[in-house]
Image: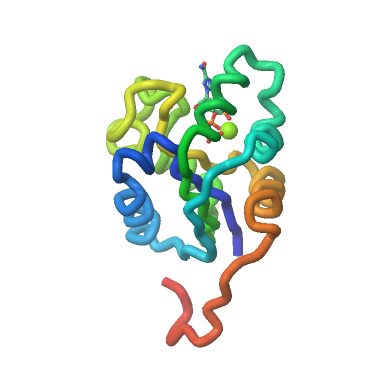
Length: 146
Ligand code: RTP
Ligand code: MG
């Protein structure tokens, strides 16, 4: 079963959108297998976004992610990596399709509400980085997940 790392960024947490965002993925049929509200160290933010370290906005991006708490999550389900990216919408909310999270709740590329892993390799890397790879097991669940 595929897993991805999603994070409500500081703008989404401060605007009270954690519940709305969790709700969208729950209603879709994905399974939440770990989550935490946390402040982010510069070291963690720089590792998380290391692929972007040469971009002109890297410093601002790290400043933003470390500025205030984020809500970090691991979600599980069929094709959850790409489906979550589709549900999030394009990076720049101005280009995001109506009905996506970024289109519905954001206007700026810097404050675009949510992060989601963009590939199986990055999903594994990010789940290890943020949660030490640990997930919660639903071993007494009454039926198979929908
Ligand atoms: P994310 O990693 O946060 O899920 O976003 P993404 O894959 O859609 O976009 P990515 O290229 O990985 O960029 C990471 C975050 O950097 C900010 N950004 N700012 N000022 C700019 O031109 C610019 N471009 C990207 C965005 O907040 C983006 O989500
Ligand atoms: Mg990205």
